[in-house]
Length: 335
Image (cartoon, rainbow, N blue to C red):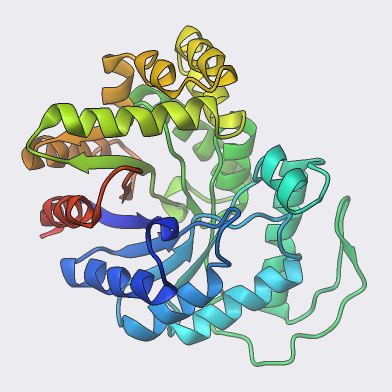
């Protein structure tokens, strides 16, 4: 049976304590990992601290933090602190971020993102394993100070969220995990070859990289409602959420679809965005429908060679009853 992770959207909850309560529920249901993301809302570290305190077995992680939003040293401190708080259950998820988040939120220049991501990973590992921040790279140059606490026997794993071939090769070479999303089955299999090539460059194999694609899921006995919710969410990701998701799906064979969705977003016509997403592509990118239909979709996706877990997530428009129904229905796959 596949391992199941849950990407928990903190924006759907009013207090960090509620996020921790939902993570504890995922642990009860047998989910392997719970992750949270961070954009322009809460600092997610307090919520993760609460999750660590209120759970015992489930891994916790970020999916993902920006290398522009925190210094590498602060990222290492964050990872080491949360690893201690969770008795070693923390995974640090990083991604190259996007121009909008980097420039319009953090006030940084979105310059050489893949090089910054690589050097951030290397410096976080240096601090976690050697206890020093001394590092001299192309974009990060630090003379170094010593980390003033004991180092863990095993440093926190670092997962990378990437989309393109070069970025995914980087994940295979330097990451402990890979967190892709919005890939068709064929698209994911193609990108896994880039991950394998990167792993080979790092003198290891893909078995050393935990592959956990993020998939939007909506369980509802009314398939039309489930598909409508997912359609709006996927269309928004392709048209409005930065340039990279749309580019990735276009390169998977859907350039005309992405162009139509982006044209609709230019007019801020969200109905037209959703209408431009055809059923065949929606069904490739999201799992919607009855409990049996969604479980079958997730199981088939998990069966792709190289996939270790499927990380389910939900979409805007679902209420707490929808999320609980979906979380519980999918959890039976792990039994």
